[in-house]
Image (cartoon, rainbow, N blue to C red; front, side, top):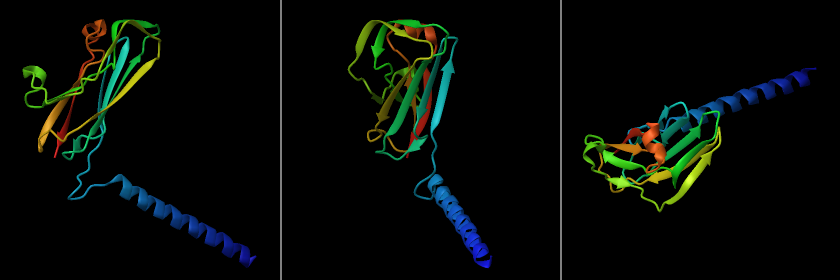
Length: 175
């Protein structure tokens, strides 16, 4: 009986030590902050109307110059019916980066993706269908210690854009 109790006690102690070590490791991975690596978090924004939900996320709110910030956009048909888009453009986003103090009002674009585009006369989105697009935005040509605004408009140039009101501007900084 004493041998069985000792075995169970050792197993319990091993489980407690393993759990404590795992918690310590997880906390060190989750908080990379320090004097040379300030913690930054992902940022996101969304807009919705009766038909569409548009979400834009950035991988970080602040990056070191030379690192890329990843932008992910998702457009979802939230209506109960299919939707037809005239002059559907693929890729469906073309983010533009502006110095935040000038914003897009004066038109000073410091970076734009501008990929080759394909246009279809009509594209049908089924109810619940989502489009996801990911773009890496380089920061090597952006100035340090600046905040930038990224403007993302879904389906720019199509009949959708004028009707949707789903343009999103989100900010990040380069240090």
